[in-house]
Length: 319
Image (cartoon, rainbow, N blue to C red):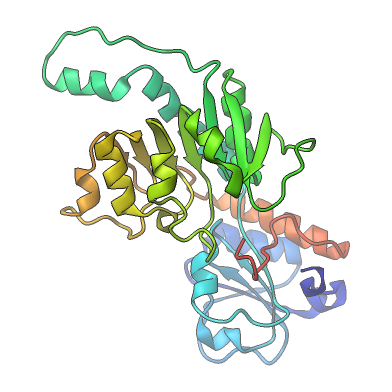
């Protein structure tokens, strides 16, 4: 991936394009950071000169030009990569900003709501029913978190601060003596059966790649033993029919889904009928304009020093 980092001299002369949807505040900051005018709008043929783009999508016309760097205003880049072959040699970076913090608080809110029976009390209130429901403590219980990157680690750090044991599930071989921040330990995806069986909560922060498409299926849900499932990653990592069956059987105790395979969910969609499930509108980690500016700045400064930005995407792996 390092060979895709543009040389400082190339960055210095590249034109800067921003999508029409990029906010005026962000456009102004991009010009300030780079010291050049920002051409807002993707239209017509690609520039003959080297160019940089900032936006959510990359039009086909620009994929064949002299693109040296595309900075995505979103954290997920699966749609960008699925739209067509990525331009050879072009760097792709993404916006994470404070998304990990936001998503971690979202997950903690639902974990505590689960402990305090908030959905059940809300249902009782709607029925004007007075009945005590025992609560439980989060401390000492186990959360299995799929994805050990910046977002997964942020979730783990916040949950562990509440006394929750955190097991991360990472890709490939795992060094047990070097768990990422927030995790008590990390296992490989092929070795997740035992942690799943002891989990109170299962949290997915997985990106969508060919390897994670439908990752949560019948076998994985069957191994959860009644745990609550929280998905803040990508909707298509879940086989929804398998989740529905697991909710009906009790293999999954409840589900909180911030993402779905098809969004937005139609009013008559099958997902609204899932038992013990709450669906939120892909809002756990909404990107703020300040996040875009902060991460673009970090990328710009890293490349000025000849370094790979922390938010660079390995286009072969998809994240």
